[in-house]
Every structure is written in structure tokens, then in C-alpha cells.
Length: 508
Image 1 (spheres, rainbow, N blue to C red):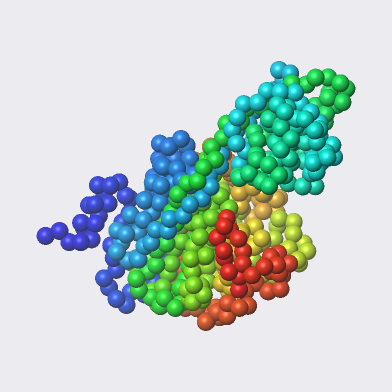
Image 2 (image 1 turned 120 degrees about the vertical axis):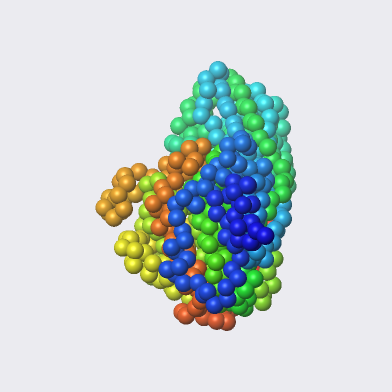
């Protein structure tokens, strides 16, 4: 007879899984930091990444939510977790609005660099350009008859959505919004008809291009533009995966999470296969051990679309269920090629390197967030790794859990900032260069992952998981969720509930 662990290994080999951990049948084998961190290696992490990259490669180069590539990612995560027999796994299905498109603009035969505004509908428009007075925020700013014309509108004062709606109400066939600065920008219009009118095909252009076209029109020239917008705007279904250890105290839940979807135009290996697959590998290896406190792993959908998956999860919890969560740790983009080691500053005591120097921007988490940060810091200190603090305002997922009164922290290797000279001296790489030049681009593939940073960061998460799975020293229990993020939260959100893409997240 084939023993169960051997059978599981054979099944894993058949399906191409590099690792599959058998359920722990040895009570008393309590998890320790050393034991769990020693199970984390780059080979297993890269196997996960290569699997997810194949999902993207076979589905148009992306794992955006609602796509086949993301559906396969979700199935992969759940099947791996289910195979351990160690977790109660749950799929949470939610509906979210998917919007993606491109825009091109030519005027009198000359091509202009145009950006597609989020939610703009598709369409082909050719017609004369007409100017709009001031910022186009009032009916009187527009010519009375704009039928078949393309409105040229300056950015500022009111939303792009209102400008486009007013133009359409007066008969415009399209709209061009030019920046109030010299460079280009990406606008956001309304996904549904507004009171002032429906949305029409539109684009954004740079301020310098806008001023050039404005001057030509004011000089009396008949300026003919052709605007092409190719867009998909539709509701799509997507899924969270939530996995909780079958054993451990469920009145003291340790929670770790990260989003599983990629940006629309990217396979999303650093963003965020690096975070989600580190979490998955830790979850698989944790199945070897016993825990005192229950551990829950959240694999969030639609993280690139307004955090819809996180909002859905938090809105689904009762007050008691939120109270049962002892802390939340977020893992996002931890393998940047020009990496840094950043720990979210849970208690707000340290200024981050993004330029925030005013304390009103240095938000602190609920009581216990200083300790979650310290546990991460303890690992890096022991490993001889220099870290820098990251501001909680850079991670909205952490803020959402913090608004619910749950202690928070996490790690990141930073995607869109530039490495400073001091940080180059700490970590190497390239000073003055982005931590991840491929962020949100097609080049965020498996070659974009820095495995050394990835393993170090994954081990730091494993250390935090094992530490809190055995002890909640430093974490107030039961958490008084009426305290939440202190008075600074009121200046950010003067409300009793936070709207996350239509999901009500009650505030502490």
C-alpha cells in the first residue's frame, strides 16, 4: 500500500507541482521561526512564479482580475492549499467593473500622444475641435451647439467626468482634456451616465500639446481631429481565496494577505506574484507544524482595481469576526530588481523615505502596530539586513484593516520610487533608478524578480507568522476595535464607514 505522503508526492509530480506538503500528523510539533524560515527557498518560489507566468503567457500576457489568467491563478492557489488538508479554504466570489482601453488622436493628419481615460467608452470620432472657456465646469463655458464636434477642455477645478458629461449634453461627439501642466496625464471619467449627461469617447493630452491646439483654433484655423478609442467596460466576476488553519485558537487569528491579480498590461511577477506566492509557500510549509493561534491567509482579487477584494472581505465580517483578527500583515511586491528592504512603520514613529515630513501624513496604526513592525525588524536585524521605514499611507490595504481597529504592518521592496544614494550604499543596485522599472509593464516577467531579496523578505514574513502563531505578546487582546486608528483617521475619513468600490467597511 502506498503511504499518504508518498501518494501526495506522486500526485504533485504528475501535476507538475514542485512542492506539496502533507498534513501534519504529529501533534506537539509547534512551529518556530527557525523551523519555518528554513523551509523557504528560491527554487520553490520560482516554481510558483513560473507557473503563474505561464498562466499570463497563455492568456494575452496578463493575469488581470476576471481574466482566464487570473482564474487559473486562483485555482492554482486553492488546489495547493486544499491538497495539504491543513486549511479550511473558502472562495469568495465578487463582481467588479473591468475597464481597459487605448486612445489615439490625430489632428490635421498629425499624430498626438493621447492617453485613455479610465472608463471612457470606445468609439471613432472625426470632427472640428472647439474650445471651451475656463475649465469647462459649467454649462455656460461651452458653445451652445457642439453637435458632431470635439471639445478641447482644460484640466482642473472639477472632475474630468463632469467636463465630458457637459460636453455630451450639448451634443459633442468626443472630448479632449489637456493637462494644466506641460506633461501628459491620465484622467478618469464616469463609468455610468451622470446627471449632466452620458460619457463619450475621450482622451487626455499634455499641456503643451493642448496649448498648441488652442492657439491654432484661436488663430481662426479650422482644426479637424480624429479620435479613436478602443475600450472594454464591463462587469466581471472574480474570487478571493481565504484559508484558515483547522487548528489553533480562532479567537486569536493571525492574518497575512496579498493581492493575486496583475495589472492589465502586465504578467505581474513582482506585482504581485512575489507577494502572493511567498504567502502561498509559507502556507504550504506551515502545514508541517502545529500552531497555538489560528493563521489565516487572504489572497485578494482585484487588488489592482480599487482593492475590491479586500473591501469585499472586510465588509463580509461581523463585528465579532473582525474582533477575532489579532493582526494583519500585508505582503506586496517584495522582489523588485533594484530592491530595497522596507517595513511599514506601524506606530508612525519614523518618517519614511518618500518625502513625508509632516506628522499629519505619518499615520499610525491601532495599538499593537508597533509590535507587528518590531517583529519584522527583529528578523532583518538578526539577518544583518538594513531596513528603512515605509509610510502606512502608501498601502491602502493596511489602512483598511487599521480603520477596522486591527493592528497592522507589512513589507515592500517598493515599485515606483527611485533608490537614493544612501540606499545604494546599504543594498547595492543602482542609485537614482526606480526600484522596479518594469512596474505595471509587460517586462514584469520572471526575469524581473530579484530572488535574493524575495527569499529574504519571504523569510521575514515566515518569521512573523511563526512568532505570532505561537504568541501574541505585545498585541492587545481582545482588541478594543472602538479605538482603531486615532484621531488622525477623522481627518482622512469623516464618516462611519469606508466605501471600497461599493462595499461598506465599518470603521472602528
